[in-house]
Every structure is written in C-alpha cells, then in structure tokens.
Length: 319
Image 1: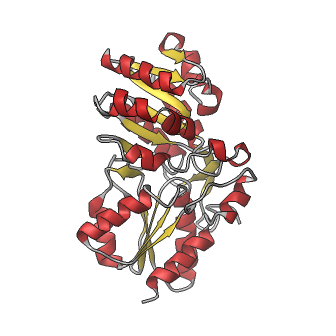
Image 2 (image 1 turned 60 degrees about the vertical axis):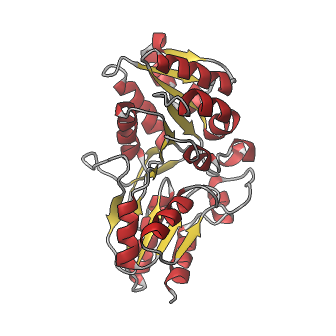
Image 3 (image 1 turned 90 degrees about the vertical axis):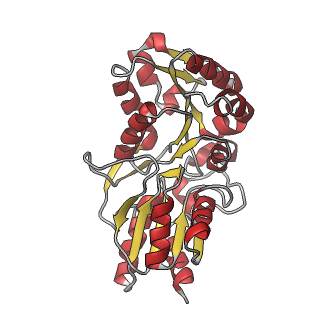
C-alpha cells in the first residue's frame, strides 16, 4: 500500500514542483523577487520563473558560496532574493556565507533547499540533505519551514515572500499525497491539527505527515486514538501546540526525514521539556548516512515508514 492510501489521500505533486509554479505566479505580484540559482534550475524548478522573468534570474553556476553572497548583496539593495539549490549543496557548502551574509545581518534572503532527505534515492548520500534542518535552525533569526504537500508548499512559498527576514524552505524530489485543500490555512509558526486523538500525538513534517496519517488510521483499527500535527514550521516551533499535545495525550511520537540530531525531534523535545515533559519516541534516519538506491527501499531500510511510526506509538504508550 502506497503512502497516504491507508488514510484515503489522493496523489499530489512533488513539493519542488509546487514551489516552482507558485514562485512563477508570484513574480508579477512581487517585482522585487529575484532568483539566484546554482545551475540546477531544472531540478529546483526555478527555471519557470527564469523563463517568465529572465532579467530577474541569475545562474551563478556551481558555486553555492558565491550564490549566497550575491543574494545577500541583492537583499541589501531592496530585492527579495530566492536562492535555490539542493539542500545538501546549499546548507553544507555555503554555511559560512549563509551565516555571515544572511543570518548575521538579518538579510531578507529566502533559502530554498530541494532534494532533501534520503527519498532522492539513486542520487546517493553526497546529495542527500539529512542535516540541513539542524544547520538552518542553528542560525540566529532563521525561520525554517518543511511543507508536507503541494498545496501547503504553494502557501508556504507565498508566506515566505511576504515574511520579512531570512528563511529556509525545505523541499523534496518525489511526488507526495495531497493532504490539504486549496482553502486550508497556512500560518508560519502554527501547527495544523490534521487528526484528532486522545492517546498519543504524532508530530511530523514533510513526507512523513502522510505516513503519520496512515499510522493514525491503522492505530484507530487497533483501538488507539492518535492526534496528528503537521509541524511545518520547525523554527519558531509552535510551543503551544506541543504543550497541548503533551498535556492532553500524555505521549508524543516525532517523525521526520532527517537525522536524529538537531531537527524537528530536537525542537519538540525542547518545547515539551519546557512546558509539559512527557515520554517521546522518534522516527528518523538515525545517526548515519544512507546510500544510493530506490527511494521506497531506502525509506524502508532506514525506518521511515508507517509501520515504524506505529511501533513507536506502542513503545511510548506502554506505560
């Protein structure tokens, strides 16, 4: 059974595709938008914007550090630069430039990392961003967004452009189920409650949200009631939603396509410990790099599945 089928979700586009379409549509409304790409516009989907607004798109080549420096300069001139590359290339290769040219001066630069996580498959570990959220969250003043489907990605892209300050938007390569309708709300810093439950809360983002909904459907058949939160904003995290989940369901499972350290799980743990400490279990890639392979096979091998979420729920609720 495919991702989202258990919970009755329909197929949807990849978040990178939704981002590309949304960015192009926003170009007319926001003439300040410029795109700076690292010679991967056909993959990040910024090429649609570049074709529509060729005088506002700059391909700096495979030079991520320079790309970020250029974006910082454009932001200082009043532009809204959208800097796009693979998540691993952008956050790992250009971290110092992001720190000094974007975060430290609090420039209005929008960092977009596509091909995140291990679900890029055959591209292999050198191109798998599994620490990008941790790196982005460590930067002072950086807002970090990980949308779950095409609709929420389009809304996140618009919110990103309207947001004043540096932001990191994390996107994926594979198609994902459609979770939201066009009239759904998206607010930076506010989690979306997608399923009601009293026995445990599953907090997820990215492609793991659909798996969390599948897990909730399976748990319901077994007599367990699971709340599901789409925590699309990792920073600033919705502390109120975490506190309510902890207080009302008394146990939490966090699921993310990221390493075990510094991502959504870490943010949830900090928020819960500050307010209502409860048992927490984690579903992530662990403390290891992956390998090249079929995306579904990699998700299975490294434990990013509905079954692992269900197992984590049973562990954390066995009290």
